[in-house]
Image (cartoon, rainbow, N blue to C red):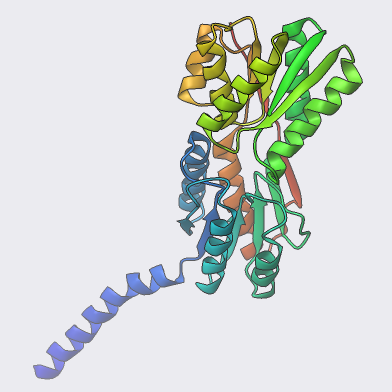
Length: 301
């Protein structure tokens, strides 16, 4: 009898341990966004979590509160490497600072996918992002349409070293130069990924350039800041505004006619594809070295 009870006890323990063992074998993917607070990154995480469910992996989502906290992002990546996560997906806040960490991860057998914003390192498995250069070119054409192909415009840049927004800004400037030589960029300032700083920068550009016809803002914080500045001066509809990315306030401003157009991405798909690519690599497959996702134009009334 005692032996029977002992056998039953051992079997029960084994049954209890089985799910725990299964959980321990579940692969862990570290996902490091540029930041966690903006709506864009909240939506990226939705795609990340959907992919985690679809591919039966665990996701460790961790980012700095601000897109300009470069040192914190490096710390997070290093911490995930030290935890021996199975794979990494990173949206770089600055294109040059993560090279050493990425090399260490790859040397340790941790595949690295870079998404949204690129790095200088070529030692990565795949890069997944919106075609930001083309997005900037599309914004230039929307600006030209809004001002009738002639006039002075301003560029609200995002932050130094942010590859995704630098590509948008480059696409915008080069397209204006090639296709619309009668439009001149007369002012450039950074929002530093902060709405209040973006508003102050827009105020400065509007003050210094009273004949300004339009502003292009290359990311959400600067877009919101520019919209606030234009409305505060009673210039809605007079100074045209083309933005990149979306938020509840920008959608409302679009409806009110404060914006001429919005360039929007598919952040949920970006997050999903990043996790999918890591899983494919862990499964011994070769995900595409680069995946460009098209932006689209939302015209405003």
